[in-house]
Length: 200
Image 1 (cartoon, rainbow, N blue to C red):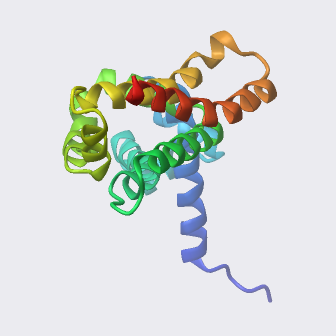
Image 2: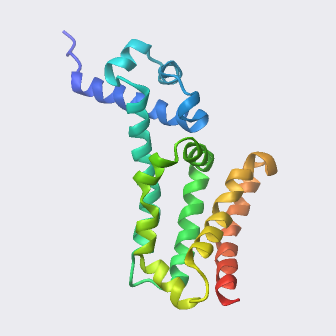
C-alpha cells in the first residue's frame, strides 16, 4: 500500500510555487496590471487553489515586497553602517554588490520605479531610507570628505551611475552577454567616477 503524502509538505510546496509565480508576474507587470488569474496560470494551479492559500492579490504583493526589500537592505545596511570600513571601501562594496544584485534581478529597477510612482507612501514607510542614511557612517564620511557638498547629491549621483544602465537596458542593449560584461567593467568605473566627484 502506497504511503500517503505529508500534507504539510504539499502545502509548503504549493505555497512556495504561488509566491515564486507571484514574484515573477509582479516584477514583469507591476501590481496594478497583475491579476490573481495571471499568478495562478504562472504557478500552474487553478484560481480556487490560489485563493485558498492567499485571499488577495494585496497579501501576495506584500510578501513579495518584503522579500525584495530584504534583498535590497541586505546589500545596503551592512555597508553604510559599518564604522570600521573606509569611504572608499564602502564605494567599492556598494558598486560591486548592487551591480551583482541587478545583474541577477534585471527586472528589479523598473519594478521599483513603477511601484514608487504608483504608491510612494508604501515605499517611503517601508524603506525608511532617509532615517537610515542620515544616521549612517557613510553620510558622516561623505561630510568629512566634502563638507561643502550635501551628501544627498553624492548619493543620488552614485545610485544613478549604478542603476540607470539597468533601466536603459531594453533600449540601449540587445546583447545580454555584452551588457553583463560592461556592467562588470562598471564596478571599477563607478568607484573611479565617485572618487573623482569627491576630489573635485
